[in-house]
Image (cartoon, rainbow, N blue to C red; front, side, top):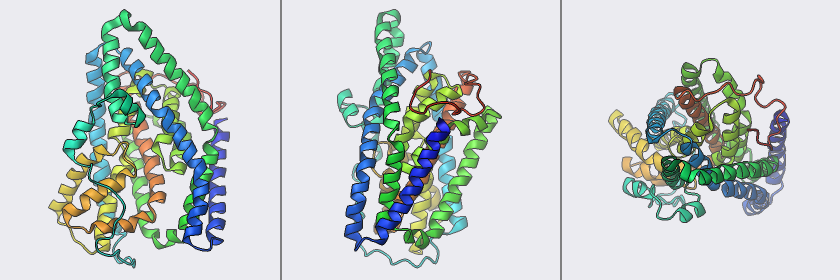
Length: 426
């Protein structure tokens, strides 16, 4: 049934391209195309709202259960250190690859694009993006507020406290741990219901994008889009190769297991949309619940590999279009700056653009240059989101292997064979 789900997703994408092309071709002007796309987007918005409805209670319940089942606080600390070590390494690799490959491909050099007017507003707010506010923002003022705003990192912090306290209390809090486990089961069942809408959401997302942008924009930005996707492919090879070093031949099974979440993240341009499916597929692959429910939420805050690569790639692309040369020292400084600021991306709308917008003025690159990438950002976001799924899936499986919490999984060579994607298996 998983193969059937994949087929439905692909059919939704193809129909979205066709319908979007027709909608763009027969729209009288840009305003009419935008209006038509707005109607398509209703389905996508409903789907993503339903996903957001699930994410907060799912992260809280699974993380609490995972930590409560660990032996002691020392185990939590040990897993946390290993997890963050991998995330930092992956972040540096992603940012460095983006920096190297944008120089190799030079997609912005000689590109005949009209430059935005000086002082033009890209509509991206950066006032809340600084290190001091990010650090304080990590700690929730109210758990209810964090849940209401889907602040994943704040939910993770609160969940760590709750899970650790439950583990410390032992039998006294066993009932609370059982309630959290039941909540996780309920949320994953609801996920099954929501996923039935995924093919329709994919169709609507693609149709809306093509209706407003048309296929012509792909030709204009062809070199930029193509080189970025080649860069993402290189990053995939590096991440999968690093996974192979730890997991051995099982990395092939992990890649197969992530097929559905990858397609979902790519077609909806949303890593969040794939979160429940990744959790399910990792469990099917053999990753212990206590590891996946701990590492994966952290990954959504600290390990967005595709988004981080885009930060260096897009920033230097804009510099190339303007003919601005940055010294090696400036580029290394940019990399280190993005290493810090990119950790605040979780939960920020159009997060990569926010980080880039905050970085450009530091290196005297016109901030309005961000308008150059806005036209194709949706197409690029699809690749970024899929790459984030790859990075977090590999990271979770690797940490599970290090902790000896990676079981054999299901015996089927194809993890999805014979499984209904709308039903969770424990």
